[in-house]
Length: 562
Image (cartoon, one colour):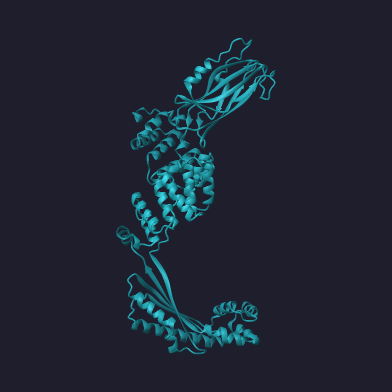
């Protein structure tokens, strides 16, 4: 409980009780040691363990002493849970301190942290009960100050997760058409050239040729022969089919006045056993498993054919249903569809945003570092594409960076409603939970976002607030942020912290202040003063902080702070 110090001291003086036959003597400060001293913020609280070495002949046999740790700061004080000890003649369940031999007592303390505790003192208050008499002994100071560098870690500086766009400036498309051949023939029949498939293919290529946003990258011809007949014959047959198909394509390109088509490539396959196996696997032919086993047993093409011909019960079916499908040439055109340029996307957003796809609009937001413009773009996404969670999530991310956490909460919740299990949304809700000091909720949200590459920085802050420094360092990895450096400072890896802080892309006042802390912990006075000057120049509030910060207690900061 936080109380006014002056009131408590006055009340303590008033407690003096007279009439005791033998009162407990005052406790001396040198009876006690505190670990750590000075105190240090761990997670969100200030823990300490006070060990008392009570000398012989000190503790009264019929006395019970209740010790209350009290942290005094900024005209207020906060108490931790009291601990009681008793003499040998007291009937009770408290630890016993021998009058003859004395003893060692352990007094744990834990205080919820507030920023004012940076300048503070830890005292022990003593309340004595002897029979029906009660009195207080003078309080004893056992530690001073709170190292609160861990408090710099904040979820507010973590960049929220952006749900990515799927914009691709170049999208490759494939156009295909097949020309089928009769058994043992390589000539292209007119009926094949008049097929709906071939007509569509030629029309598509002509359309691509006249479209400035599309480019024909390559045209490929693959010709095949079915695996019946001799291998040598099929080799020559497939080659002729390739030659005839290539000649046809070249003539058609000239006819359609298509001059830019990248590279025209062609190849042939003498016996299409791969296609044969695929068609058999997909068929309902009786004994197809037997046919497939033959293919797996024999690799020589001519032996394969002989063994399959020996399956007289099914070979006739193969000849009529499977083999004809393997006598063809396939023409494939690879076409690149060129999307809008960055300039075109930006211009359309400014003049006619409805002409942009959702992914083009989301991509537009990545073209600027101006938060106001990003915000306007994401607001437009929510307007034109209200069922896409990415607009709301990314709008919330901007609002979060603007410190408008209430608006960010609304946006993230709308995104969650549209995509309940999305990891980006879950991470961002976890960040908001940390901002609101709800670490249990943050833990749940971060668990739902597991595997997200952006999660490390958020988890790092979470682990710092939980007091798990090793886990925080691991979560941050090689992140170059103030928060990552704080974890390294807490882990006493000052060299790594220095490297991290020196690599922060956009250093701010906190970056330089933390560099000064690294300087103080490595006894580098020049590093302390130069970085404190820079921090105070960027944010004058750091002068008052440095004046009270126990990190700098061994340094003369007069020339820096004045």
